[in-house]
Structure formats: structure tokens, C-alpha cells
Image 1 (cartoon, helix red, strand yellow):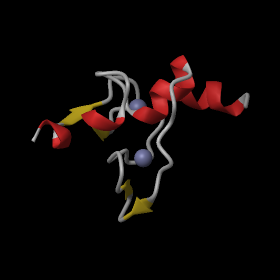
Image 2 (tube, rainbow, N blue to C red):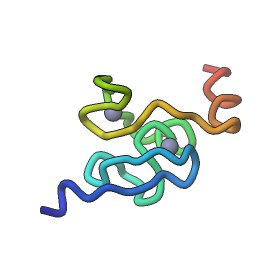
Image 3 (cartoon, rainbow, N blue to C red):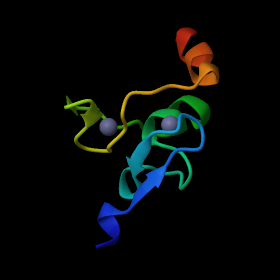
Image 4 (tube, rainbow, N blue to C red):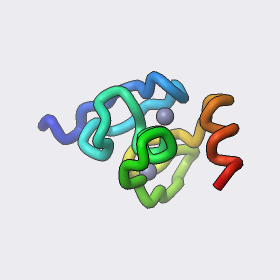
Length: 69
Ligand SMILES: [Zn+2]
Ligand SMILES: [Zn+2]
């Protein structure tokens, strides 16, 4: 049942599914932008990704970085 452990991303504050991220304190989105890890191919339903649970929020720092891509 470890698969469904929910964690809070320290960067954007969103919940995420631990098993979907390579980092234990970052959601797949932030881990991908900050450290280049593989991102989740998000599928949004009812305001959050059904695969990793990310809710689409971004910290100002992440916004700044992702604007550059
Ligand atoms: Zn995050
Ligand atoms: Zn996702």
C-alpha cells in the first residue's frame, strides 16, 4: 500500500503521490523543473492530476524557471 502514500511538495505546496516522484519532498513537476527528473504526463481531472495528484500550483520560483523553457 506504499504506492498510495500522499506527500506535500515543499516547493509548490501541492499534494503528490510519492510513488510518482523521484524526489521525496518534491512533486514530479517541481522535480522535473528543478532537477531535470522525468515529469509526470499529467492528466487533469477535477483540478488535479489523476496520475500524480499534483494540483497544478506553481511557486513563483518555478514559474520563473519554467518561463525560460
Ligand atoms: Zn511541486
Ligand atoms: Zn501528474
